[in-house]
Length: 447
Ligand SMILES: Nc1ncnc2c1ncn2[C@@H]1O[C@H](COP(=O)(O)OP(=O)(O)OP(=O)(O)O)[C@@H](O)[C@H]1O
Ligand SMILES: [Mg+2]
Image 1 (tube, rainbow, N blue to C red):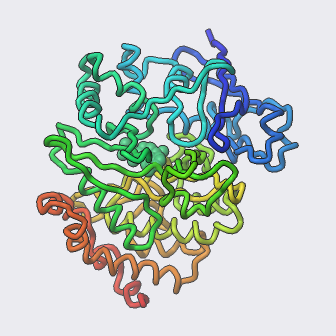
Image 2 (tube, rainbow, N blue to C red):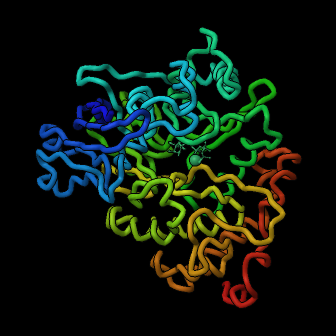
């Protein structure tokens, strides 16, 4: 029998959560079969209201959605903007451990309610209009407990009382790898991605060095570092959806994302986040048919006028980089967008989750379509899509040449970033020589 649940969606405006609207989920056992949402009228009257979902719940113009109950477009069962505020595989395992439930055995409304107030983005979902926020961020000093707890969750072992801090610190997060949210000594929030005991691969060092290299290639990359806790490595990536500023103050996004810190009366603010899957208005099943060009098109449709050109240029650079480093896990949830309060519009988020995959395959494929030859991971294929990114042949070849200039030296960069020799060895078969992914004809066009 279908069962209807009413949930209260809050959005963080400045440094306080405001009720944004009511979500009605129709569930049958663990599955959502329909959703409806109505923005609160008071919320829409706020000049700085944020849009929960640009595709199904656009607030420009606000009057189009005033006092309306709407369902997601494209027959989707969930609003993408709400689904992105739900935990993904890892957060679900944490919530199941807390509630002593089997894998994927809880209704979606439970996962949505249990994820806590530090989930990615600026939303919180609560059972009642008067329910308080659930803050669960731990200190970086507690990482050893969080690592032990994460290991137990991976093994399905019970969690002793002193490790229960993982239930809030780990429940809010997307992605499949074990992780937690922590604050450093200053109070800045980081996402900690753990090394799995069963994994021989030094994922934290390889991922961190690949992110540093992306930054050298000119992409927008959050601060990333690797720390050692006992015999395990942890990659810390600064949360790009949090920044520090005075109430009423909106620093330029480049500063907000990377450089702001607590102090001098600054408060912590949140930026609302949605995934590429939401911008493409599809579900995981349909995402296999989507391409980078589809994302570029969605950027033109939904992002702020002033950032479209730069965002599409960066997306093309990310596609080229993913081809060079064999990051074939470039699915739409590994691309993100942020609501920029200075523009009152969407923009591409900084880069995250780029992990080279070593393989001996000569023919490789990306998750998303690259160009006219589909998902084939070659530069010739990439260049066929240049128009979708609004790039001339000269601009596209310059991007390729610039990325290659750094990627060809990747080993020296990895050494400079402190990656151990053994980890560099592990990544070797992921990095591709330009001759293996392009034709002489294309190489002749490079500046
Ligand atoms: N620096 C960051 N700031 C804020 N949110 C982030 C950051 N990095 C990642 N995220 C969010 O957390 C989610 C999980 O992170 P990530 O994709 O790195 O994990 P993963 O477990 O490796 O994912 P996957 O299952 O795709 O392999 C992302 O989908 C994104 O929503
Ligand atoms: Mg991911």
